Length: 413
Image 1 (cartoon, helix red, strand yellow):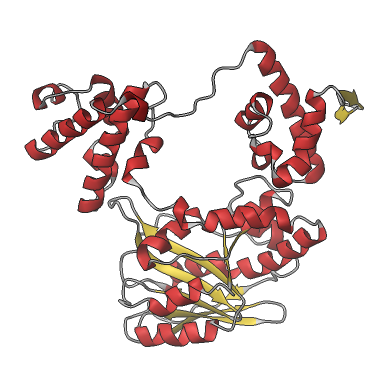
Image 2 (image 1 turned 180 degrees about the horizontal axis):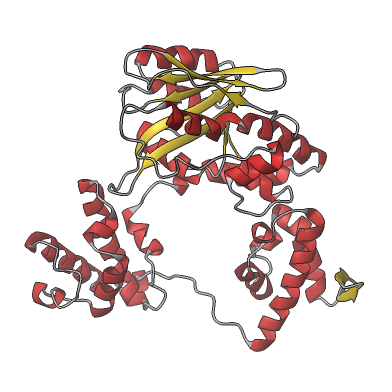
């Protein structure tokens, strides 16, 4: 196996955990280390674990949550690996999670996640916790020769040579008691992260790429990325690409109304009205309840909700023209520009292949179009992206470099 991961064996002897007692539900044994796994279900157990974990400079963290029937994700389990101990903290059975919040907010402790975006959101909602600093192994993997959104299972397989089962991927984590198999599955989600983190850090330092990765991690940990502003919900409205600026002003009001209703009732926004119906409301802009009812999918709205939706439409229609949203859309490039972008993308793939940094992490086709259209403001003109690819693409557009084929492979001239 790869450095830092080892081969593990888990033994399960305990009955399903019950409230009020501290349970050791498993033991992990590597070539030369042993880590106990505990189920933490009382305030005193949590305080004791967090006290022990506070001496660790690196914590591996994962969450289990449900959000299919709610607006806010329901935090059901928090797994933390600290030193030689793995804990499954039960936020359903523990009312006061202050010690865990303090641990996760400690700026001297690096929190290691895999694909952390949803975990950051869930912890912010459930604990009021802003985790920082953060290290995301999925992001780091894209800098180290793996595809941009590599799964945790694939990462563990690649770094540790261990295949993880996915038998509990559709588990209802809100039901109690949790059985040993569920806890084993949850434990695995943090078990290998510390070793993978150490290996990745060594490699990033060796390649002198840590300064590339750190800004990406800081951006992921920024609470502003996951805080919900109802006035910006329209930006995530699907199928809104054909709306005019005036219709977008209506969409801003309609989506803000939907967001507030969904949050107050703690139901998924689509249970209020779907995106498809919301877009149709924006296009037709009904000014009366009677006209609103002509739109299929609005019949589940009561009189009061329907009236408030019509009022939201009215606010959008009354928005001054200069205050209507401006959403940047890339105009369809000409055939000549498309050809240039195709050539640039070939160079980008060559850079990706040589560097081991995932192509989509460096730039998308829209980023390439931005680079052609407005070089100074383009993302490729900044920081590590300029160093890695932007400078070469700039020379390509200036006619200073070109492409050729040697032995069946594309090479720079």
